[in-house]
Image 1 (cartoon, one colour):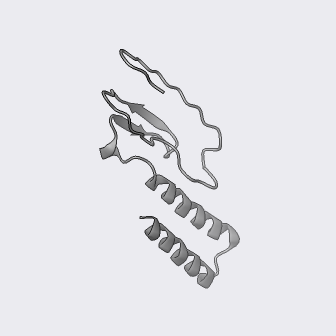
Image 2: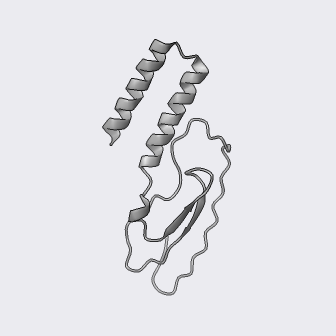
Image 3: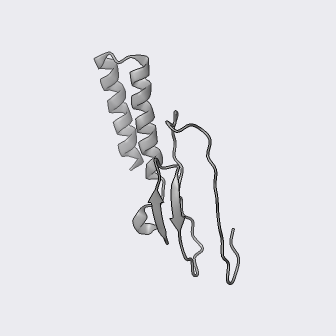
Length: 104
């Protein structure tokens, strides 16, 4: 999958150089590719233990799960963006109801 993203980056770079894109146009295209690459690293909805509701982008949303004998990792939110449209400020609110065992 990473090879595909890298190939797409190189194709876009070559196309933008040949088409004479401005610096801002090139950076916007590059940012879109970087964001797409960051989305690939998130745990897919079919592999999640719970239900994820996406917000305005990959950095926001809500997630609800009931874990039983789960000791793996889920990557729920985030990404790789040079310039996030909604700014750099994020907050995390978490509520845990632990009936048995521990949570981190």
